[in-house]
Image (cartoon, rainbow, N blue to C red; front, side, top):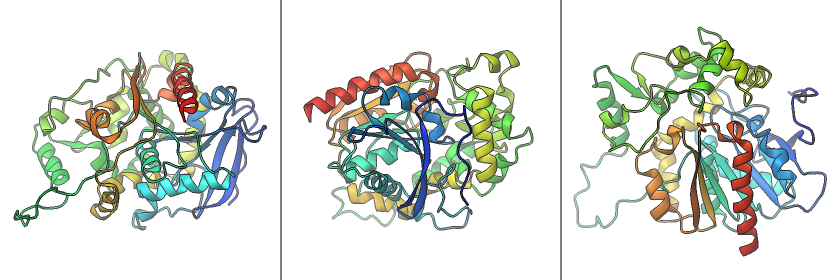
Length: 390
C-alpha cells in the first residue's frame, strides 16, 4: 500500500518525504533536507520509541542549512516504512540490532553514498547507531548517542577454561530482576519486560483514555515539562535501586502503560504552552500509530531479552567504538541512568574516541524536539570538528 505524502504545512519548508524501495527488504520511508545539492556529506538520524522520522522535523532543516544532506528514516516497525511483519509471533531476527544496522547501511548505499559523516541515534536508535559504527567504521565515520549511553557489546565469560560453568544460567540476570521487582511491596515490573509482553501492543493501541490522550501523557511525563523528573545515578542494580525510578520506568506490577501515565496528563494550559509538540504535531503521531499499532516498534524490546539474538552481538565481544563519538543527554531525562553503569562503561571501555558527554539543561527525553537549537549547536560543533580531523 502506498501511503499519501504528508499534507501541505505538516513538514517544515525544504523537508522532503519519500519512499526508497528495496532497502534490506524494506520500502523505507525517509524525511530529508539538503537533498537539492548533490555531493553534500550525509548525516543519518535514527529515532527511538515511540517516535518517527517526524521527530527530527526541527533538526533536519537546521543541519541542512550548514551544508549537509540529512536523512531520517522511519525505522523497521514504524510509520510509513513497509516490508516488516506485524504480529507478535513473527520471527524476531529481522528486528535485531545487527539487522537494523544493516537497514541503515543499505539506506546509505541506496542513496548513492559510500559513507555517512555521522550516524545519530536517539533512544533505541542509539544502540543501532553503535552497531553501525562497530560493524562498519569505514562507512559510519562518527557516531552520536542521544539519551541512551552505549555500554558496549555483551561479552563472553573470560578466563573460565578451568572453571565449572554448569551452574551459569543464560539470561538469569534478567529473570532475577523480574522476580525481585515482583517481590517488592508494592510489587513492580521493569518497563522493558512489560513492552516485551504480548499484551503491550493491545494495551497501547486501544488505551481506555484514547490514543491521543495516552500519547500526550506519555510524551509529557518523559519530558522536561514534567516537574517530577529528577534523574540521578542509581546507587546499585538491585530491585530496590531500580524502584527509585519513576513508574513509567519501573511500573506497578498490575498496571498497563496507559494506566501508568494517565495521572500525569498535562493540563490544558500546559498543552497550549507545549511548543515542541503542538496538538497538530501530536495528531501526526496519533494517525501513524493508529494505523500501524505498536507491535513493530515493540519488537526491538523483545530482541533485547532474546538470548539467541544477544548471543549474535557477542561477535563484537571486546570490541570498541573507535570512530569519534559523542553522548548528549537531557538533564531531566532518566534515560541516561536507566541502565546502571552504562554511562561509565561508555566513557571507560566501550568507546576509544569519545569527544565528550553533554547534558542539556531543562530537557527531558525528547531532546531533538524539546531543544533542537541547542542540540544542533552541539552536533555541528562535533561533526565539523571530526570532519576536519578525518
